[in-house]
Length: 247
Image 1 (cartoon, rainbow, N blue to C red):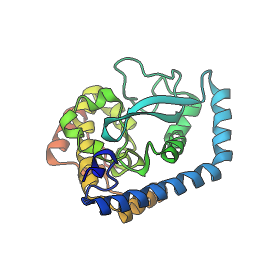
Image 2: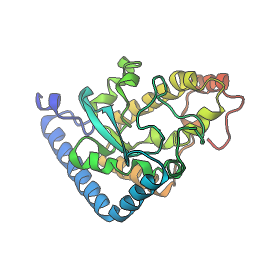
Image 3: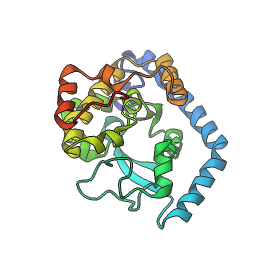
């Protein structure tokens, strides 16, 4: 079982060496083909976005940040730059509201349609990430929840997952909160981790395909209010005057 100690688990349920190696190879092969094809087909769009970012505001095209990957290893995550500053200010690990003052004009559009995440296809291609998997956090965030997040770090992080879809309007939700940073750390982040742990235990290739289809088509999506626990919803009411009906 030593093979399980250094390879990221593609699916936690694959608990024998043979099952694990087959699942790992299959998932990696799919990621390699999907990301390679995506980079090739989307290259004209990627170039147009890069030009727009350069014309829109001074700074680099890409936002590069260290994130924590499988087994707690750091890697460099790539995004299209959507903010005035390339680096986060101390203590500001979240964006609040749809019109955070740090977000550029181009960045607002890119973030709205999640186009700023497209460079992560390169992260998938080189093996840092998978197409489907829990979103990677910065180390400062993982250290706040070391025990809860330990199981999430057993699988490779991804571009899309159930938590990222459920919390796709997170900026808007934070903009409605009376204490956004406390709301994020006490409610949203623990809920995301809980959902990621649940999904890490129940992954499969067919589940990955359903997640990709749901991400692209926006069909068969659950509402946030359907998956939050009663305790989490009660905490939401502590920070929100009302829980939005469309969430």
